[in-house]
Image (cartoon, rainbow, N blue to C red; front, side):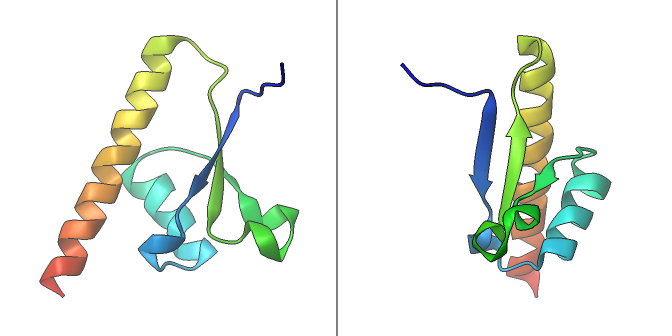
Amino acid sequence: PEGTYLVWLDCRSLGLSDQELEQLLVHKAKLWLSSGSVFGAGGQGFQRFNIACPREILKEGLNRLKEAFVSFQHTQKRS
């Protein structure tokens, strides 16, 4: 079997540039993920999330990510 501890998040539906996406993740979610764009044009709009950590830390990170995306979507609906 094949496996990995890295998850690729497809964030293209948010319509953000890689820089805008990074700002959302760092400033709203307080997470530092790896931008997919470092792997070339095909990685644009993706973020790489390392899940090789204790379960409680992973849960906290996923909750921060969810809250940041929900907040962003609410902001977009008001615009």
